[in-house]
Length: 624
Image (tube, rainbow, N blue to C red; front, side, top):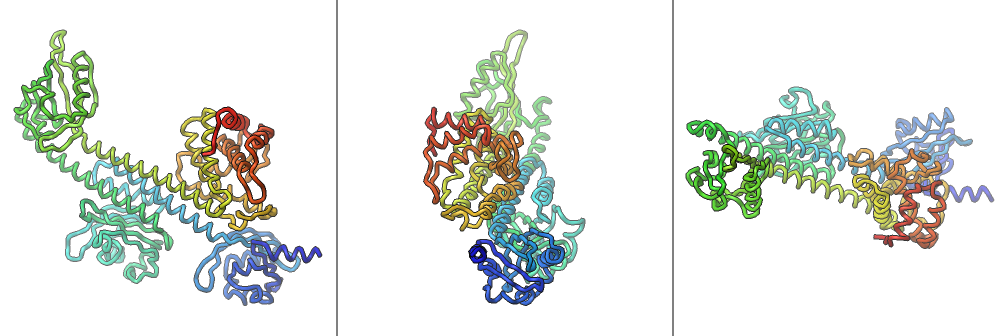
C-alpha cells in the first residue's frame, strides 16, 4: 500500500523524476520528466540515455550524472538542453544517489531564464541611455561627446564594441570612423573591419534608410560574409546600427556590438534608438554653439574700435539712471537682440519692448532693489529680439554710486539660451526615465499577477500600506520611495515558480512550499543588476525574514534585517491575511491586527506593528 502511494506521488509530481540504472537505462520516468524531454515514458523506459538522446554523453550535464553515479555525490545544477529541432530549454536539476543508480529531479526554468535575460538587456539599455545623456549635457566639444558616448556604451553598459562614423558624400557612400571604444587601435581601419563594407553592411543600410538596422546573428547572416572572420576573432555575435538623424539629415551612424546572438530585443533596440536621437541633437547643439562662438569672436573684433570697456566684451553691458532710462549700452547688444545702441540709448527701459511681460515685472523689482543699494546676481529673464525670437539672458547688476548717492544701475547681460535649452532637454529626459522606470515597475507587477491571479493587486496594496506605515514612522522621503518601489515588485521572484503551484487550490506540499520560498532569492537575483537609487534588491531579498530568525531565505535576525524589509514584512502579512484564498476566507482586519500584535517583537518590527495598528484603528486607513 505504501509503495503504491509513493508511486502515485512520484507519478503526479510537477517536477520531473527519473531513476537511472548503473547501466544508464531508464528504470523509472514520470510524466513531467517525459514532457521535459518532449517524449513519452514508453519511449524511454528500458533504453539507455545514450540511445534516447544521441550525443548526451558529451554534455556537461552527463558529466555531472557520471560524477554522482560513480562518486555517489549529490549534485545540484542548472543545465541547458538542446532538443533535436534546435530549440533549447533550461532546467534546474537535483541529482541524488539511489540504490538502483541515480535519481534525477528536474524543474523547467526556461521561462524564468528568458525573463531574466529580458530584464538584463533592458537594464543595460537604460544604463546606456542615462550615461550617454549625461555625456550630452556635459560635453563642450564634438569629439569629446562622441568618444564619451562610446566609452559609456562599452565600460558602463557592458557592450563589446561601440563606434561612431560620419556619413561621407563620396560615390561609395563610405563611413569615416570618428570615435570608438572596445577594440584595439587600428581595428576600424583594417580591410576586414565593418567600416570597409559599411556601404552594404548595417552601418551603410542605416545611413541610406535613416532607420535602425539590427543583426542578431553575425555568424549566419550572408550580408556579413566579408567581415565574419574578423567578427568571430573579436568575439562579436550581434550588432545594431543606429542612424544619427537631426532636422531630417543623417549625420552619421552609431554602431554597437554585443558578444552573443539575439542580444538586442525590441525594448532594448527602442531605448538605444532614443539614445541615438539624443546624441544627434547633442551634436547639433554643439555645432550651433561653435558657430555662435565663431560669430561672437568676429563681433568682438569689430567692437575693438569702441571704448575699451565696451569693445572687448561679448556680454552686453549697459547702465540706467534712476528713472531707468538707458544711459549707455555696449555694441554687443546687436548680437544678442538685433538692436543698435543708438536705437536704445536715451529711452526708458520699460518702454523698449525687449522683455517678455512675464519678465518685465521681475526686472523692474530687481532694478528698484539695486537702486536701494542691493545687488542682483545671475537672474534670468526672457528677452524679445528684434526678429521676434526669444532669448534667455542672465543678468547681474550693481548700483552706480557717486559720492554717497546712488545715481543709477550698471548691469551685465549674458545669453544663456543654449544652456537653458540643454537644461530643459535634460529635465525632459529625466522625466522620460522616471516614466520608463514607473512603467517597468508596473510591468513587473503585472507579470506576477498574470501568473498568480489569486493575488491580483496584492503588490500594489502592500506597497501602499508599507508606504503609509513608513510615513507614520517618520522615515525620510527617500527611504519611503524605496519602500514603495520594492513593495510594488516584492513578489517578482514568483516568475520562477510554476503557475500550477501558484494557483493550487489546496495546501502546498513541503517540496512545493520550498519552491515557492525561493522567490525572495530569485527576485534579488533579477533586481541586483538594476541601478535603483534605493537598495530595492536587498529589501526584496529580506521581506520574508523574521526578527527571531525563523524567516527565509537566510534566517536573519533583528537588526541584521533592513528596516525597510521589516516594514514590508508587516504590510505583506496584513494584506495576505485580509485577502481571500482558495483554501480559506479572508480574515477580518481586527483579527489580523490582533495576530500581528501578538507577534510584535517576536516576528515583526514593533514600531511597524504599532504604526500599522494606528493607521487602521485611529486614522481609518483604507485599502487603495
